[in-house]
Amino acid sequence: MPNKTSKTAAKATVSKTSASKAAVSKTAPKPAAKPVAHAHKSAAVAAKPAVAAPRVEEKKVLTQRQGFKTNEFVVYPAHGVGQILAIEEQEIAGAKLELFVINFIKDKMTLRVPTAKVANVGMRKLSDPALVKRALETLKGRARVKRTMWSRRAQEYEAKINSGDIVAIAEVVRDLYRSESQPEQSYSERQLYEAALDRLSREIAVVQHVTETEAVKEIEGQLAKSPRRGAKAEAGAEADADADGDDAAVADEAA
Image 1 (tube, rainbow, N blue to C red):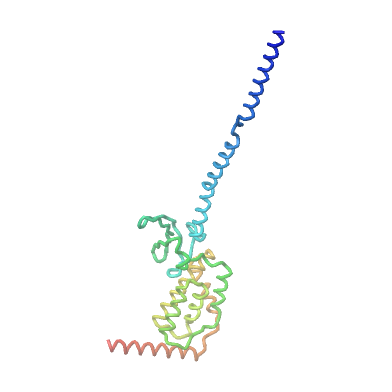
Image 2 (cartoon, one colour):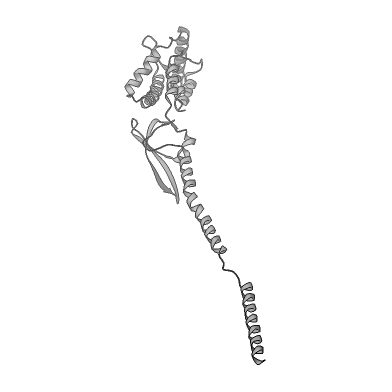
């Protein structure tokens, strides 16, 4: 009998121990595997902005530069055709400023233009061949001379020359051109004609990959095809020139 009692007690003890182990295993928390995965995800999320940042910066730079590159020829309205020598940075008042360094060989001048201001100043790429052809066709048209005082016409011509529009410049060349059989130009007319001819020939030379002399010959060849200005228009232009000369003489006497 004592043996049976001890065996029963031992079994009860074992069952209690296994029950307690089961209870412990039920209540014990499982290993935290998910937080580690979350940590990897958060690290990946944190890494994404670092990868995307250069793209945003690159897009900003391209927007500011408007697609202009080093060694490219461009048209700056107030000075004509120039070449971008470099793109440099300067620090002004603690802020970094990116600049185009543009060289105008014929004028022996170097200009620095902020990349963010190219649209405001009207800087543009060279005209495409189709637009150059349109400008050359314009030269063959009939000269259009307004019946206004020369001083006003001169302002309009200057505005067209400095607009940077190749067709508008061609119109000035056409309107101020004089053949050998036509009356000579006044000094101011000649100056404006040469300024317009210079702007036009420079751009045509760069676009067509020819010399400026060859470009001028092509322009003069197109001008020779234009119909001659009528005698009435010539007389009107001469009358305006004489009137301007009389006004200038009166002004000199008054001074």
